[in-house]
Amino acid sequence: MAQNNQEKILEATKDKQTGHDESVLNPVYKNESDLSRKEKRLLEKEKLKGMGPGKKLQYIWMYYKPVMFGILAAIVLAFVLKDWYINAKTKTVLSIAAVNSQLSDTDDIEKQVEELLGVTEDKYSKVQISVNITTDETGGNLDYYAQTAYMTQVQAGTLDVMLMPEQLYDSLNTDGIFLNLEELLGDHVFGEFGTQSDQTHITIKDSRLAEEFGLSYDSITIVVPASAPNQKNAAKWMESLISEE
Image 1 (cartoon, rainbow, N blue to C red):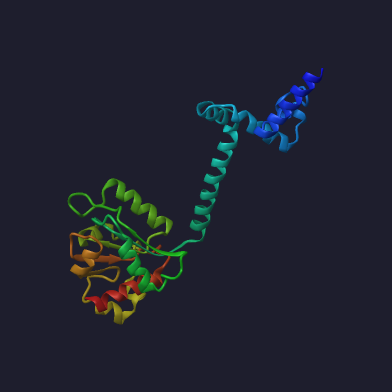
Image 2: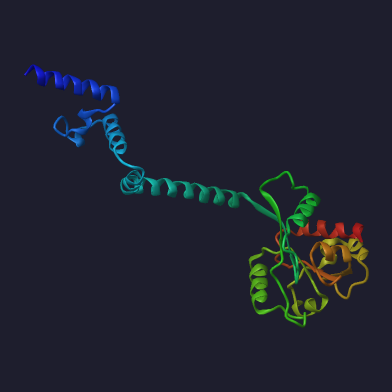
């Protein structure tokens, strides 16, 4: 009897020294469902102690997979909501479409125009340069996909300025599709661009402008769709071309 008591004392002492809590693991003492949160954490710790690396990963994956997926879903949702919030607050102050542009990166020219418009300090205002509109081989008509993109943007009122070859202007110019630029810019500014065949476009030869927008033609026709939402900024940008000619 005394020997049994000594063995129990030795086992208790050994458990205390090694940090092994038999009362948590042994269901004789308490059912797992009756454990407190602290005791459950200790139980999980004890279980993991007796497992090898492979078994630990398998155990964690099996029992904590829903928790991990929940955390991952929360992180993804947070990023989605952040992007949605930023996009909801961001306003395009000028949208320019350059037909047949060969630009692969529009960041530099967008920053230049933002500086011109004085919106560089406003993180929610941006200039957008579009280079996805192209013509067919003749240069006088838009290709199929570009025609769809063009009509969508014009009807949605998301396009402010277009740069294009003069022959394309001739095919796109229908009654009321483009603004009267003499009225938009004023007689004096409009006259600074030289003689034009009508008031709904300006055609200029500007190799610097062609280089900035990645255009292979230096005789550039500029128009403003009637549905343009930022007509004042469009006029301000066009006026800046006079001093640069």
